[in-house]
Amino acid sequence: MVRRWISDIKVKTAEMSREQAVEYVFTYYWYHILLTAIALGLVILVIYHIGWGDKSKDFTCVLVNQRIDYDRDERIAEEFSKASGISKKKLAVDSDYLISYDDVKIADANESSYEKFFFNWMAGEVDAVVMPESFYRYCKEQGGSYTCIDEMLEEELPDDENLFYEDGGEKVGIYVERTKLETAVIAEVQDPLVLVFPAESKHKKAGEKFAQFVLDL
Image (cartoon, rainbow, N blue to C red; front, side, top):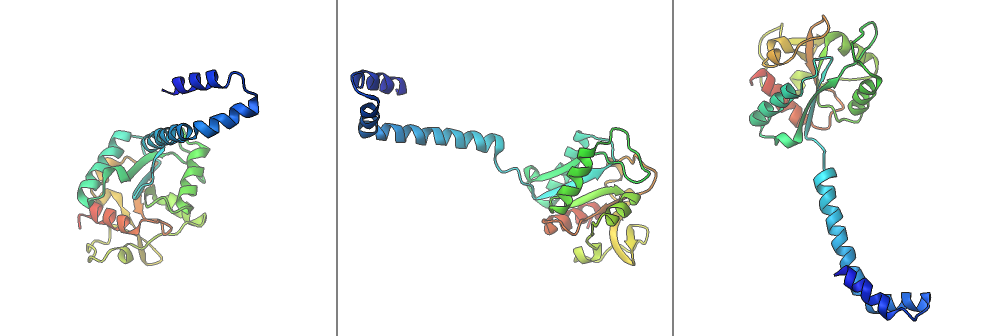
């Protein structure tokens, strides 16, 4: 159809000057142009929605210095989705974070993982982190802060002093080896793994549900 319009315009404006041709097109074909622009806009909108639409997540859990295993990450997200009622499409569990720090040197660590991790943390896009205990201290030195577990949860916490990681008398982490995540993670460093919840997180309610999920509350 567009080709027919173009061919028709060429015939009718063949003897006209450039200015006359432009005036003729906008006088007699303005609605054709409008309809074409609307159709093209709709096509672009659909393509954008499919390929680059809203990718924001309602919850993101990061596994630092673990074996990168996307199948495992997917399984954790699926199990949490079933337990929490949050759509799996809105959840992210990501082990693609290999970070060297202080005297800890990780094979295949790269600077982009380091920058991505701390940028997303400070932007409130990291809601839970499984990390070595020494990395907890490192993050704290870098200005990171954590949500206290007993402040996050309304339920009475399990009476197990070995379950929680404490800092300054406050429960700020959960030892992974004593939760259902134990079989899902493999430490690449020697110190214990703790699950923590950054205070900067934008999704506090989802973080609460994840704590309930790993503690079977």
